[in-house]
Image (cartoon, rainbow, N blue to C red; front, side, top):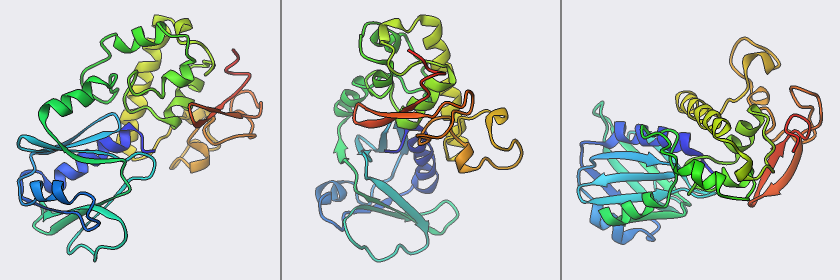
Length: 269
């Protein structure tokens, strides 16, 4: 599932390509036909993200997209290719450089037109987004410290923090040497502040680079040049490989439906 930095960058790209201009909206698959008819030909105001949710404003109506596990966008310029397969939604518009721009949505969990109260209802259910200007106002900390649930599970709960997924969950806990099995109530205020600040920095870097890199230069196989894929993470998808810090094999266990990766020595309970 795409994490928050991917949606943030996607919102920026779509705003650049389509905002301020009429957009032709269609649903070749037919599942979004009514919503497409409502939005077709209207001017797009902007596209924003919050956590793993994408919001495109068309006046009083807002298109809401949640990609889920299998959703994806494809985009390009010039004439769009012929529709193929289960194409949920297509946008076509005049790009900022005068050439046509298009984007296709497939496989999303949610693709719907919402009213302002419905948008507010979604936002009210979400915790703070580390990428948004509004900083953590204490809600996330109160949720964490009031729970016996493992911090590794709480970080995946979008009502605690919005936009954090499996990669950031594993990597942020390793970077701070926190066991994913530690109960939330045992996470003190200073530790939470450090976790949240580090998440903000890592996710902002993810927006800039278009990928998640969590390793420090001194912990990679090589320190110069582009970061290789195998050097980008400390524990995520490194099951059985030696920990970059202590050499202990990285372990994996399912937690809240996703494979959790951690070092049993560096992140001892």
